[in-house]
Image (cartoon, rainbow, N blue to C red; front, side, top):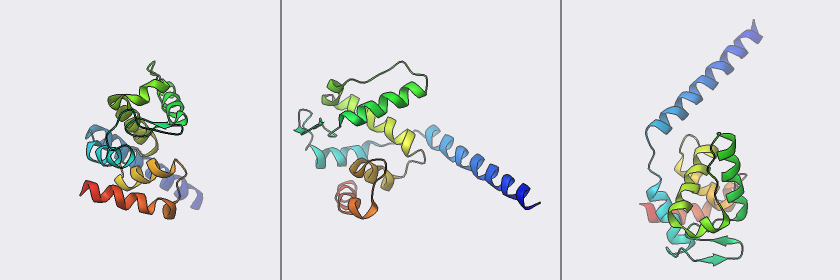
Length: 139
């Protein structure tokens, strides 16, 4: 009986989470204020900004481009990004949204900022200062 209850509980949680995710995607969440704040911190809006392997308005790394392409491939899309696309502000923003839709399906602004600063396995304490900077620009 306990095992059945656990299975039913897990199923309910999975359905609830997928409903929230679908709802967030349907709402067409607006990442523009978050992206604009990050752009000001990362590059001051300069699409040609370069800092080591990070380039463009959102300071995108080659690893992030590869992750976007993997996400697109897993979703059955034929679209792919090149390293040169990092210098294009529009395409950089598209990559930001792809990363958020996959790694942050509930559209948490805090998670989005921390993820952008610290990567997929970000550390909360190490991303705290960055979170504060971005939030100041959003508000």
